[in-house]
Image (cartoon, rainbow, N blue to C red; front, side, top):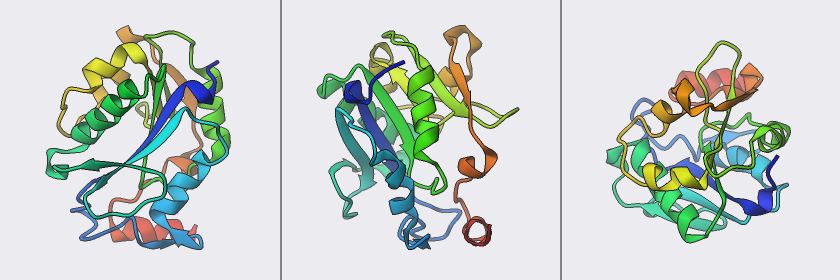
Amino acid sequence: MIEARRVFAATLAAGLARRFGGDKLSQQFGGGSVLGAALAPLDGFDWLERGVVVQAGRDVPGMRIVNPAPERGMGHSLALAARAAEEARADFLLVTLGDMPRLRAASLGRLLEACPDRDDALAALVVRGGPPGPPAVFGKSWFRQLGLEGGDTGARDVLRDPANSPVLVDLPADEAADIDTPADLRRLRND
């Protein structure tokens, strides 16, 4: 188990939303925006620090980590988050996504409880039978590797490699839903 006060919590929200056809994170969802709903589960924890990786010009509460080149993919946003965690001297990096508005705080709590207290720790939420994370937690020995730009794959290969012994925590399928297209948003609003 790890404590939130040792974790840099980063939400990746700098994507270009090409499949959506525009700014999906500002779309209305549950009385607020998609991004607001995705950030809400993080509010109940006492993080070491918290940041949101965004494109230049997006206003978000708290610490903004500006991604000047979002066209480089999620791996570039992840690299910026890992560097911020390293600068904050965090022991762990939690990565969430800005387009997952159904995620619940209880699932993040289970992830922190399951994460081993080791520098090389890896823990991810996973829908039964699916691939791991994000949301995912990385121990500080991964920061340097994650800090290298990884294109659109980000940490996918790290989390999916059984040799890295990631701890996998069940995530209900409804919480794992993300928004890639307008149809996804309509479906989630109607569920």
